[in-house]
Length: 474
Length: 109
Image (cartoon, rainbow over the protein chains, first blue to last red):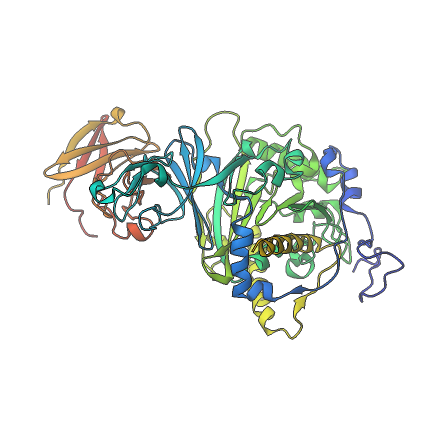
């Protein structure tokens, strides 16, 4: 513990503050970024915390099949979820199969724009496209008996049509799933009565006005099987409280206990981590040069030898300067107008139910957590790296997803930085233990920090609201 | 064993993403261009026997136009449950701007 930043070791003393009001002693994320040479945009200068209660979260919501089924009906069939990126389906006839639990949606690029259909033949139910992911076809032909639809969803041909006089083509259009586009992502929603995507996204479009993710391309796409419920998995990635114990190597260069957490509306929340500073947990704060030397970067291979802190400089200034140049050159893009914090820090937005977005430049990820088929205790965690579109020429085709099995390291993925892979591997080890602990525990639920784990509380509150609404509607 | 290559097409006739069926000694072969790299595979999907000609080629995979089954054009390996049986691949070379394909069985190592 840094003796210049006194922190009590045992909880319980509220020091006269209302719940949720206390913060890590020492400089806040806002204090740190306020001193940057190239200051943050306004959207990163605000903070929006709200105390949302301190009751325990029942473990059964992570283990019970019944709860899982409720989520399938009242969350997954009711919310907007990103199915794919627009670059996955660039030409007419390109499609992407998106699956969540038993739900399967076929997203298709047509002459008239992007459409989505329930991925099941209207004859006898066979999935029209049995494999998840990208593909391409000029018509949608069922592999079982050959019933065929146009890309626009009109019934085109039925073998032995004489046997189906009762099939009226107008009644056999492929049923559509709603589609919305934002930031280069294709969203779908199976609920015809849900609000528009724009309304659902709440503050996100405003916050991302200068972070147009439509101007990015998918450089890397991996999928990792996690031995946990999808919420268990996601909740490990929407708080930084675990950095201290799980990723001790990151304390040299991460403001972890002083991360800023913000909640907005029902669907959006974020956290904001200042890097290039010592953790408040470190007994001996690092020098600015040591901070530069120990900084985790998305891809260390891109960093040259300009990492020397000059007299009077902060580590953050050096890192921002170097990464602005190196990443700008590597991706053929101009980062001169991008602030230091957008270059080096972890800015992470959560969109309900399962999307996590990083608008920053050096760690440009998108996460997605999905239940796997019918198993409440396994999920698929996907990571995409979204890089800036080159100013000249075409970006490479979007890659197929590289699947990492439960026992494999993230390091098997080509292009994955080994230091980053180690961080993800550390997270995965905990998830198995936590999911099993849910069942082993005598205590029936998890206890959350009022501030550092507010995104979990916020997410679970919204999940509860969807479940309650669904149950009220019967 | 002979190593006879048959001249089939001008390389210039096949821009990236294009494919064309050719016949050599009774073999129905698809010659294509995957992002600048030429390939030759059997022109019959192993799923339900449809010609692959004209299928979208991307990321080194060709998608069967009929049901969308995808195959790696270098190895012939298919994706997913419908792609269990690989495509046969053929040796291909480009000589003075002409694509040449051999239908001889590859020598075992």
